[in-house]
Figure 1: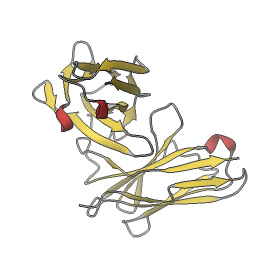
Figure 2: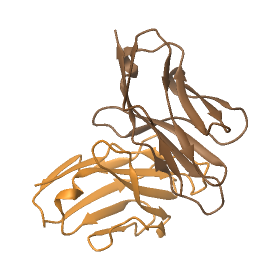
Figure 3: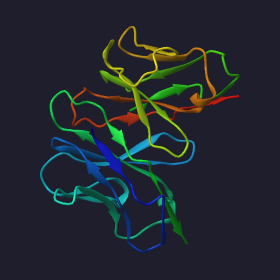
Length: 115
Length: 115
């Protein structure tokens, strides 16, 4: 079975500082990895995904994520946090083997950026 | 491009009542998903449609939940009868195909409260 762990319920960072939101995964085949952000009373908004190729993936709003196969991690990063980045972030994984369709989400990490 | 539309945005019902949610995916998207997001958790897939056929409904509580996508476009999710533990946000998502690499795009969700 595939699973995702987001070990931090909340991450606090000062505006202008770099941020990291952690994600580790477990899947039998090659992983397809996704990050989504959720603002209050809104649906999930796609940020970026890793399918294959370059381990560093760049996405929307200056976010990037680094795929590390040996550590089974896909941490979300941003060089300089903004107050408007404060939201709930979800990591998700899908098994890359044919016929495996379900997307499994982590429990989410709340990012709080202080002015 | 219009996003995924859902209605209603909020619904409050008594336990044992029935409720229905509606979703209209992004135009041209063949695959439609319904997720349940309980407070403090990540979304959990309930059912996946490819055009008007069911691809995965393994986590759908079929004794009380049903869903249809009759013309391969919009979809309805129904709960009958509702239980207290059904209180959650119901998210609809769509993707161009059901290929594992495809990005799922989410609607704003319907927040259901069962009293």
